Image (cartoon, rainbow, N blue to C red; front, side, top):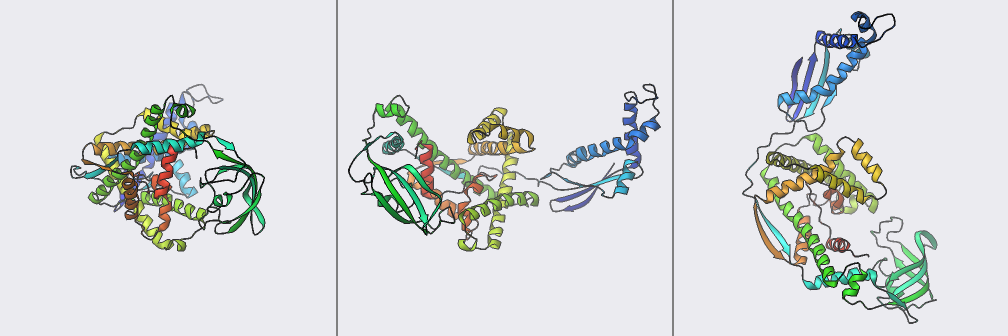
Length: 495
């Protein structure tokens, strides 16, 4: 077998593999000899079938099996012999000419095929001792714990019907019908809907106009949908809502005591405080972790400069670009609305894709050299977390991971990466700094603005999902108000 390198341009490689016809025929004859004692053919005693007859009957099919085996197995062996790693599955090209293919199956001509691939560049690891990060830590004050408990307790608050006019904080039970230009729109109607005035659950201006209503009263409310409302057909439109008030109820007082804790399913107020404090600290800890990780990645990005495999960059860019266009479509906006052009956005997101790929390769090399491994138990926990996110679809998800090649890598990669970051944190200079929650969240938002490679590409601000799923694990910092809402959800706020 001949292995001839026909292209070595940057990271691109092309290898021509030639297996002489006589070698292919020899392999075929060996297979036929093995099959001789097993084949049963009418008119011949077992083991007495002439090889020539077997060749006539089964030669082409055996040769086809050999071709498939060679194409399946040889590429990885060839790369291993060359000491190379392919960025993606090598592309195999064979003759498409039927007459030529028939000659190969008859061992009349040499079997030739070509491998095309990109190599993963060799990365010489540099000392990590020079990496320095500041780890911001928040001491959660008692009043914040109390504030969050009260918010959580809103889900257990009771209301008592009253005859007086509705005030902020009261719960209004009503039927309503929304219209735009006098025509009812989808999703704009409900019966026995409950709304606490001041909860800001409805669009701006709606709840304010409920102040003063009484049970049994009919009222028409006029509001304007926000220009960035998710439903494009309603965004910026003026709408009216025909309201029929069925009940006005005042909230009962909330007292922080063991009885409240029991109502929320916890044995005591002290235990409830302990749980809530832990949840708040965990939420802040996640932000701290991402900020520290971003500092590490930024410094690694400065330390390592090398060409990245185009195939990996293309795949990463496609993932990012798909999310960007999805976000734009959902918001009903264009690149022009975001003060950029598609060409400019493409160029900037291409840079982001290259950064992600480069850092992914660096982290992979660091982890490999450090012997970082992902255990089966960790993989099972990650799979269980996936199943929990999609109740009722457990079978489909399990089938996906069992039957889709490479699917398990999507579970392994983030675990591996976090373990590599842990390894780095044990080696680098880490300085703890106590900050307020406002400083932690505000600075995180500012860092996100400074790190936006696409300075004009505002859609990136909405690509939090694309950022969070990055191979390098960077999260696009959400605006401050969104960070707060995430914190509420993590702390069990039912609203």
